Image 1 (cartoon, protein in one colour):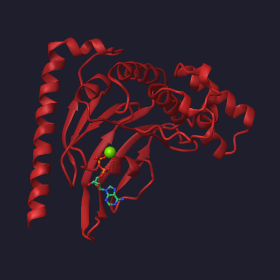
Image 2 (tube, rainbow, N blue to C red):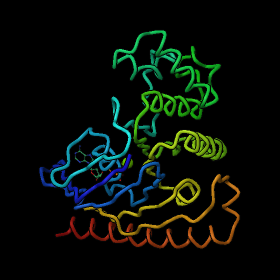
Image 3 (cartoon, protein in one colour):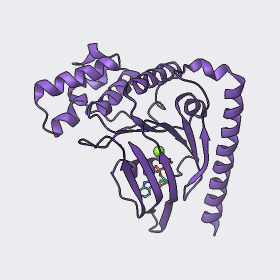
Image 4 (cartoon, helix red, strand yellow):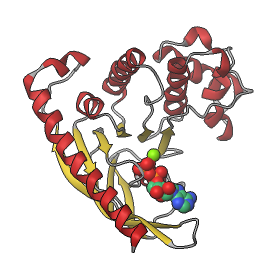
Length: 264
Ligand SMILES: Nc1ncnc2c1ncn2[C@@H]1O[C@H](COP(=O)(O)OP(=O)(O)O)[C@@H](O)[C@H]1O
Ligand SMILES: [Mg+2]
C-alpha cells in the first residue's frame, strides 16, 4: 500500500496553555512494499506523525492517503510500540490474537493465525506464557507477531528495539528483515539509531526539529538480503557520517529554537 502524506500539520496545547506546533506541513510518499526509516531530533514529533498515520489522532491540516492495488481489508495499519504494549493478564497467544478477537474472528481460527505468527517470530513455544515471563526481546517479538496477525497493509514501528540490549537488537533487526522479505508489507519505522536505519531501510527520511518536516530523503543503496555485516563497509561509514551531520544540524537547530522560545 502506497502512503501519501500531503502537507500535514499538528499542534498541541502545552502545559502553560500555549500552542505547540509539532508537525509543520510535512509531505512524503512511501511506496507499496517499501521499508522507510525516519530519524529526527528527540521531541520533534515522530510519534505524533506515527499516531496520525495509524489513525489515532487527526491532523489539523493536510491529508494522508493510502492507495494500492490491494483493497484494504480490515485495519490498514498496525503499530509496534517501544514498550511492547502487551496486555499483562493475557497469555502471549491471546495478546497476539487480540486484534482478531476484536474483529470477531472465531477462537480456533484466531488461535491458529496467532500461533503461525508466533512461529514466524521464533517464539511458538511461548504461546501460553504470560508477558512478564518473557525477556524484552521475546516480548517485542510478540509485539511484532501481534501487529502482523491483523494483516495490516502498513506496519508502523515506533523505536521498537530501543529498549532491548545491543545483541538482541541485532537479532531482532535481522528477523524483521526476514519477515519483511517474506511478507513485503510497507513499513514505516522510527528510530534514533542511524546504523539501524541504514541496515533496515530502502530510504531514510531525516526530520527537522519542531514544527517538523522532512529535511533529507536518502536512498539506501545496499543490496538485499542484508545482514548486520554491511556496517563494516566504507560506503556504510560514509552514509552514516552524512546522516549524522544532518541529524546533528537538525538537533542543534531544535535546541536553539527551544532556548530562544523560552527566553522570548
Ligand atoms: N498530547 C500532548 N499534549 C501536549 N504536548 C504533547 C502531546 N504529545 C506530545 N506532546 C509534545 O509534542 C512534542 C512531540 O512529541 P512526540 O511526537 O512524542 O516526539 P518524538 O516522538 O519525536 O520524540 C514533544 O515536545 C511532546 O512533549
Ligand atoms: Mg517518540
